Length: 247
Ligand code: PEP
Image 1 (spheres, rainbow, N blue to C red):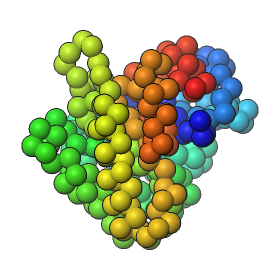
Image 2 (tube, helix red, strand yellow):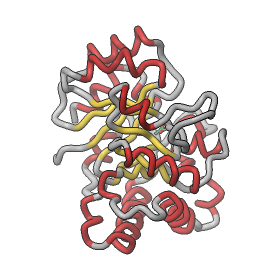
Image 3 (spheres, protein in one colour):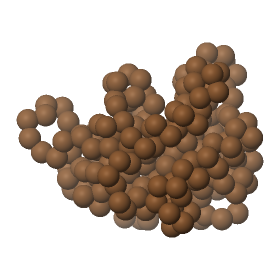
């Protein structure tokens, strides 16, 4: 299997001591492992990154560069605390905080300015899927987020269909998207990227996210269109996450 990018998205879970224990017990992996931690954990995790087992990501960034924006954290501040990556446009931010594509676009521009790699999350919701509007939704989100960006090669795309994210599923038995759905969406995103940025866009990494766990990760990673995974719930238990990164 080629080297994958595997990102733990802890969301608003764990404590600093649990995060440090997690970093200590993280398995060695031939994959590129990234941990997207809450802002308040970043300074404590920074030293652990030096061992080289994983890289640090933030879960969000301000759309503003500096100034009177109470509660915001800027790209420059994230750089200072050792972040090499940052999630942007996660569906939980789009849904709960009403983030728009133009705000996401500004966030990406700020991150690129400070040489932090944005991990852009895009994905259709259940209603859009039911109406056959997956491609329309992905195109709008991608075009909006990448407007006026000439060098997209530092950006990682995470295809995260909202209906496949575990916390948005009502049934107790959570399910990832089917292989067919994942492949179709990844091919569509890849085609869009090539249309916007030319052949070089073939090198942009596209990850899948939505109920990836230790049981289904090998199968998902075997899909040649999938360059890795964004993992929510299954990144909270070290044994589960280690099983995923050791694939
Ligand atoms: C996510 O929210 O980014 C995610 C992929 O969550 P989960 O793995 O729990 O579906």
